[in-house]
Length: 212
Image (cartoon, rainbow, N blue to C red; front, side, top):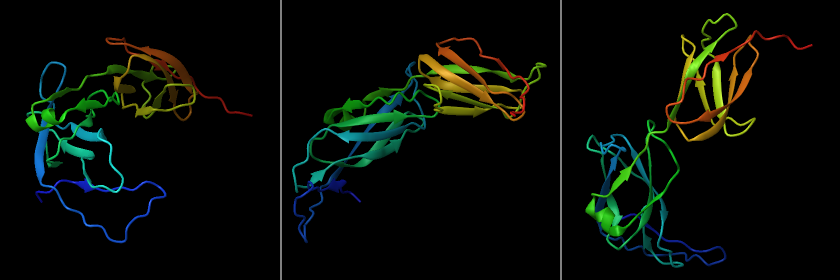
């Protein structure tokens, strides 16, 4: 408690000493805020340090931060109490199941981390929804709806509800390959262009035929 996370490293081929004394550094608290595009606080967002910008010297102690730092509270604030006293800059990545995961890493300075007021913004993605029905127009429950960036890939999957409905949230702008399959029905494949405010994409499944 009260000490910063510390690591020491050696490159391949270097001799690792049999004994090494680690002098712990006093920790300081850092933090920040996560908002949506309208400036509202986002609760439950996970903040992760994905990279350390300062290069480590061989065999030299380096206080650093990496991995999950915290989850935002109802005010959109997160805190981490084991940051080192020394100046440090990091990349931060923020994720939330209801917001777009763009994979973007945000460079944040030591001053911003210490000030605890730096705001990271999460964006909503594109929603793709629709209904899966049979040849008579009746909803198909339990059908698997898969999306992929290319033919044969499956990046996301949903199962239709009792009304045959499915929903994908937080998609990127572009094109996806949609595949729908369910027992007793022939699979359907459709290339869908995603955009904000797009109309529902409904798919009708035809009865399957046995292969001979």
